[in-house]
Image (cartoon, rainbow, N blue to C red; front, side):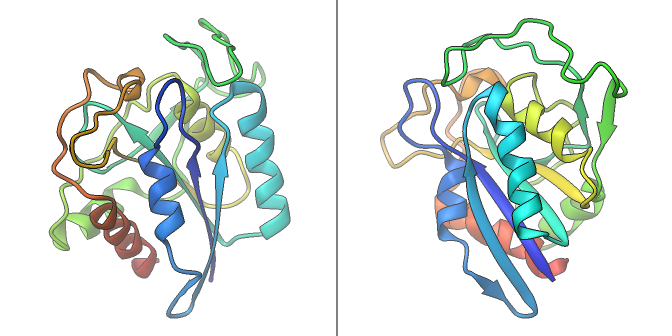
Length: 201
């Protein structure tokens, strides 16, 4: 099975994005699975087309999109993507849509193509802190969740805590949730969790 996993570049004044750190650490294969990885821009106008191009190029059997969420200390698969961009801060291109519909021809929200409840069950059974989320925010993470859930490939968007090296704090991860918290996670633990998900597919 071919699995495409995406993360995001750092955004705002941050120099690290936990989702990209996980993507960088993933192996190229796991058992019968071949893994392709990529990093998406934190930009409303270009992230969706970039994801669609990656799917066309790689033709994956499953798509996992990762993003980081300040204020969360659990891994949270997103049950839905909503059809709206409503940014409290500008994206990396300086674009800040407020209350803009993503696709006027699409429904108000799209469900995940992979069951987030099953993924959470797998993670919890393996000893990881995880719960299903029904709010992906309205920044670029949600934009990608909504886009991914409309593609022909089974897809799931997974938020990971905004982990930083010891002594550092995420500066703008709170775009997704409240103030960034000390999650207690390491990049290696997040990577192990995502590898656990991949191994179960």
